[in-house]
Length: 124
Ligand code: AMP
Image (cartoon, rainbow, N blue to C red; front, side, top):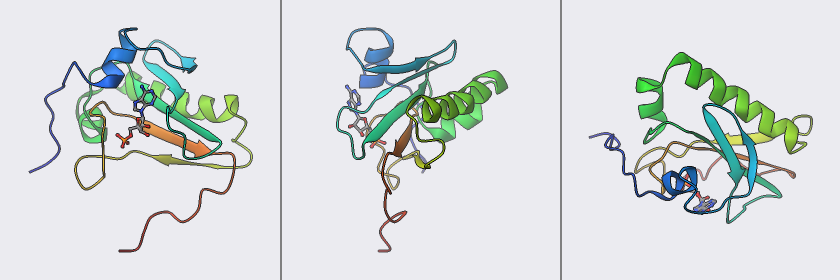
């Protein structure tokens, strides 16, 4: 069984998109919103989310339009520039489903940088 694909409108990122909860906005365009993570794991820790209702990376790849997918990747790159890490480097993480450790069921990519972010994952 894969990750759930039924979108839950009460998830925290849906509430941010509806303006019910504040966020520290970094970038916004027609298809995408980026804001700082509330519990940063690195000096730069920004989340990039599509405005559309996609549960996960799988759901996004399956259902989003080419325009949404293109805008998303361009927004990630823009965030790297706005945060000043495009030259020093950064890590993109898209936790997906149960084994990926995804907590919020609205597709998002973490942009982490501002220092060396360490090994890719635990080897266990
Ligand atoms: P994930 O485990 O990939 O689903 O990550 C969810 C991320 O959302 C975590 O890094 C949280 O710190 C972050 N987060 C949860 N609530 C908020 C919020 N209200 N504003 C910003 N980031 C949040």
